[in-house]
Length: 331
Image (tube, rainbow, N blue to C red; front, top):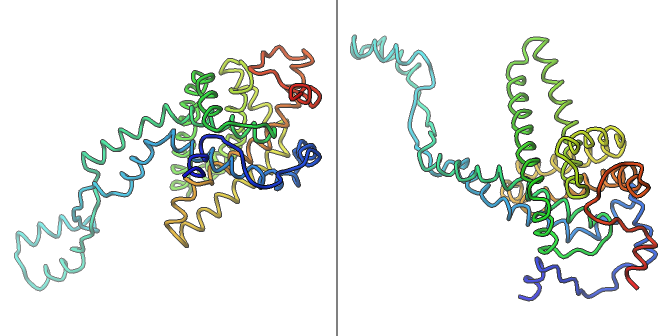
């Protein structure tokens, strides 16, 4: 029971030698090779962050239950649009050789699942996630950022503390984030099913490009909101600029995120229960960790260090510690 309790308490007393001071120093360089080392070391934090993210977004379970269709009304409907006309002919002419043949061809029925009132109530409850989504991202990003910075974290305390300190920005950015995701998803579906013309096909690829760019941009949205005291407009502006300034790291992170999601989708079709539960265990956390690992050095280079040198008029929410300052604080 003690081990289970320690999962979310942040208690870090463990058996094992851990890592040396020299190894910790080497990990401060957030390179491609060090990613795998840090990923293995911080995997426990990633899983915990993922769990807290979904715990904060618990109403999503109602949406998933509604999507499963357990509360839907099952009815039967003809598969051919001509059946109503054929049915009228049968009623008028009666059953004969011709109408029987027409009925056998056009009178094929299929089961149709229609959302019930209970299903709509479940969907309505899940809308709470519109307000919790940004807060959950703020808390998870804070934990992942300090994991990338190789700082000690207390899971519950830091997660809730980040939300408490940044709830206004997290709420607004979360609603903005969900809105953009919905618009991009709607446009992708619309252009995909109407891409017969050249213009619509080009529109589809343009939306794909914008969606990929936004995936990169959103890595910075929550990271900047928990790191600096900025207006929402500046957070969006800086996120776009940093996405371009760190394009190499961002593309690598985007490729890594795509691979993780692809593996999850493949597992869903091979072993459906596993594919369904993976996002609740670590898929979201791994994708978030990749995004923070790629974006934090860019933020540090263009904002944190420039802030310390007074080159940017940005008021940080925390006092960034250099190596020397960190050593002094430990003594």
